[in-house]
Amino acid sequence: MKKTVIITLFILILSLMSCSDKRYSSQYWGLFDTVVDVEGYFETEEEFKRADALIHSTLSYYHNLFDIYNDAEFANLKTVNESGGKTLEVSPDLFEFLEYIKEAERMTGGACNPALGAVSSLWKEAIENRTLPNEAFLEEASRHCDINTVVLDKKNLTVTLTDPEVRLDVGAIGKGYAAKKLAEVLRENGFDNVLVNIGGNVTAIGEKKDGESWAVGIKSPTKDENAAVVEISNTNLVTSGGYERGAQIEGAYYHHIINPETLSPAAGHLSVSVMCEDGALADVLSTALFIVSLEEGQEMIKNFDGVEVLWIEPSGEKISTPGLPQEK
Ligand code: ADP
Ligand code: MG
Image 1 (cartoon, helix red, strand yellow):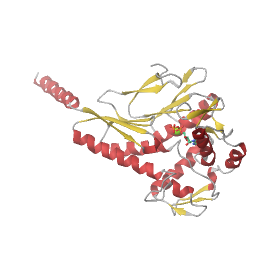
Image 2 (tube, rainbow, N blue to C red; image 1 turned 90 degrees about the vertical axis):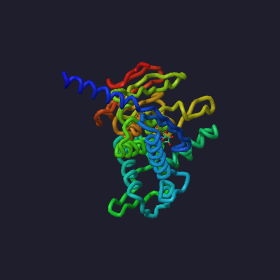
Image 3 (tube, rainbow, N blue to C red; image 1 turned 90 degrees about the horizontal axis):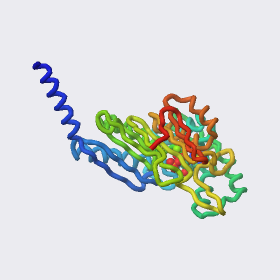
């Protein structure tokens, strides 16, 4: 009898403790050219402030490291892009990332090619100016998109662009890679009830509260509503879609995710969402699967464990692997 009372008391205290966790949230603008939303459950406001500062400083660091437009206090991707073929020494963090982007290109059979910058920048300009890119310029740019010309030396931590006209564009990978690193940092610091959404790249660090998952919506590419709602904890949910960044030019719609084979915006799907534990992989695969056909994509994901995918097709049809719902 006494034992039961003690156990009951213990459970009561535990549940009171978890009930004392309050929800906090914050939002940052300007990182990775998008908006970042943070929410989490913390015992005290001080705890939340500590986590919030850590999240902001970690994401700012990766934002600066991957910036191709602005200089940083250290060699970043702008420095690499402007190295003019000279060998450049980089930090261990940047070196590891450069290794990863080469790996990303390899594991997606070239569909996700972070060396596509010469071509993708022409499309970005085209979308901004609402004029189609010049075919001859696209053709010329496509000659400078070979990731194998990004040569790494692990011993000396250097990178050499053996084709100085190659331009890295890590729009397809940077957010997911930063999210993966952030999840590691947060776990190391004992935070494990946090949800971070970097412009649609959603990372759940732990559960929402004890035993509860976060409900995350996958937007419909055509209507202002969710196409599906997914329960997540300790994983990532990343969507690539043409519908968010694009423009109507000469009567047709063009967007920012480019098929390296056709040198034009990928046309096979309206959106592709990927759920998996590795945040960087989720980002890489969502872009790659958006580019390749459904059949090629289904083959590609056989190479990875624990990857779940939802394809939304131009017909409106939803196709998914067993771990992702098709409902709201
Ligand atoms: P978002 O950035 O909207 O989350 P993605 O992760 O799919 O979407 O990345 C798209 C971005 O990646 C583009 O804006 C561009 O900078 C870059 N990009 C476009 N096409 C490719 C490609 N085939 N391979 C690698 N990066 C690409
Ligand atoms: Mg991506």
